[in-house]
Each structure stands twice: as structure tokens, then as C-alpha cells.
Image (cartoon, rainbow, N blue to C red; front, side, top):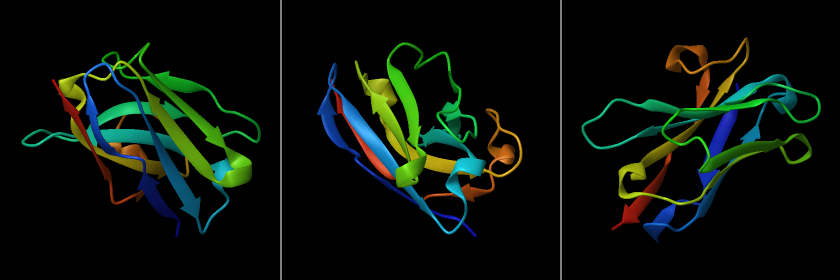
Amino acid sequence: QMQLVESGGGLVQAGGSLRLSCAASGRTFSSFAMGWFRQAPGKEREFVAGITWSWTGGTPYYADSVKGRFTISRDNAKNTVYLQMNSLRPEDTAVYYCAAAEFGDGTSRGKYDYWGQGTQVTVSS
């Protein structure tokens, strides 16, 4: 089992920045692909950003809606994945979830085996 704990959410004005963190424990973090998803009220959970497994850094990829504004990264020494969010918009308001995939990677929720509890991000206009 892998445990994931997100932190860093909060309230920010449009145009501002936040950095989310997700601390992993229980399994070998570097062997897992990691992803960030979000779920706004009344909407389905959607892919935001992912990063492949790697002994070093991993390859990031993004949803079109956040490309150029968000950056995903991982620190295997700290068992942590980050999501740096810049130029935030009101439509980015959602609960953000961290997820881990043991085999493969991708944008589909079904690819991911473990999920955190989520952290709320609210962007005011």
C-alpha cells in the first residue's frame, strides 16, 4: 500500500500562485508514475498533470488547460511530488488530488492505483 498526503491548497486571487505538495510513503516512490487530478463541484475528476517514474527526474505532461501555467516535478529523495500553479484562474477552483500509478502512466483515472484525500484550491476573481 502507498499512502499519499496532499498539502498546500488555499485561497488565492486570480493571477496568483500556489504550490501543492504530495508526500508518499509505504512503497518505493521512484518506481511509481505520479499524477495530479482535480474535481470541481458538479464535475467529474479530471487529469491535470503527470510525471513518469524515474530514478532521477521523470518526464512531465499536462492537460491543455494548464499547459504553460502549471509545472509538475518530483523529488525522489523526499518521496514528494509537487504541482507549481501560476497565473491561477477562477476556473482552476477545485479539490486537487495526488495519485500514483504502479504500472504505466497516463491521463486516465483508471491508470492510478493510489489516491490522496485531496486539498482545496479556491481562486477568487
